[in-house]
Image 1: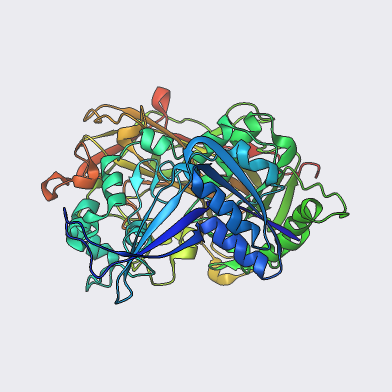
Image 2: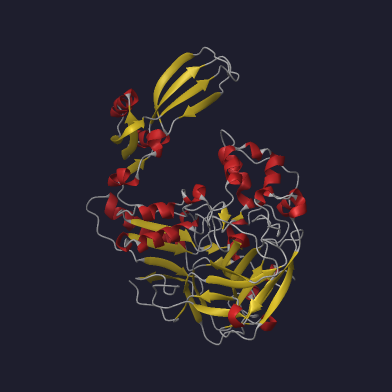
Length: 573
């Protein structure tokens, strides 16, 4: 086994001071040491010292520090490939220490920030990004289609506000539903907790929309602009509660660039990062064995083995390995998805919202269904009390949706019990036509498998409502993610957005259900439903009730476009 570390390297210059300098002051210090540093170099050196054959790929700029780094690394048992960057400065850190053991570090990143993929890729033999955070605004950690994820606001502080691991400030309120509802906006919480002083929070507040700040970080776009030939297996859970967007969209971006020959997709019945742990169950659902171990042993290990160890047999994984969550087994695909908007063997098929809570493939007559969305009484994403640390976070996406069915602000539409199985394989598209009395608003769409009232295999699952795909969309972005606009009150608007990928069979006797609502709290922040320039900074008086009407039938027929395909499994690769 040979490990490759692609990372930064720097020279660490330590200066001892008796006290921290005040603003504008000059103080004396004594030079302590000059050492090799940088996270990438540190990891590579430690692995090499432990006996693992290791190669470090790291950028250096110009100047004497580049020579110093090369000399220090030559004394270590690590193979080194330094990438020289003309016109750049070799990275270095100034570390100030005081007699009581405190320290402060200033680091330059000119070389590290200018290392290009093509500079590093010659050393990269194979990769397997697992639950990668690719686009923090479109659908990974921070936002989903513009709706901010309050569940991660404390994590932001622990990542950027402390020298080590730290907890967010205690609130004295166990129920996060009440905690965030009482405070108001995310910005108000940041002010109260002290997080408003954090530079990264300030950046987020300055960039609530999908502008260059977020677009420039979107790795799927960066990869598409610089497609690589490195064999890569992209892994993502079908119920990844944190990073649902990244892996599949990056795989799709490389597919569009003609890179299918060395890019493979894996989607298991997993929560975030469950691929690394036991994969025999998720919430109340038990799978056909330990699916995560099975993937690691049958697919991931031989995939790496052929590239990282000499003389190992060739291994050809399927183009896409995706768990069938209805029939409870893995499916291997030579082509994926089976149905989509453009370029697939089958098109998407619309299933329409119908009168009296019906759902079907016929548009039905024109009409509308209304509900009142009240920010003071938002729909919870979990049964209350909701505490982000109560242990339910990992499996919340597979919870029983009956907790919300029947609320006056949750619109429910369902088919009659199916007489034959129906398979969906691909990304559904929510396509809502709606009007609101407000000037902003969110839409949550769920595609649900409703189990029969009596379920012999597991009686307690009788009537269970399993969301196989669920997503939120912030209405101000209906025309542009970069340039939001107010919703014209009382006028029908179209809200069309992609839902998470499915590979599922609705069995005979089951029903297909679609739920639509406007809040999913406190996971996502509340939309004031009155247009304000920045929802992070919304004031208490901005939050208002709104009557939302979903249109049915005719030219403005609300639907979910489903990737319906034949139930028979395609030939395996």
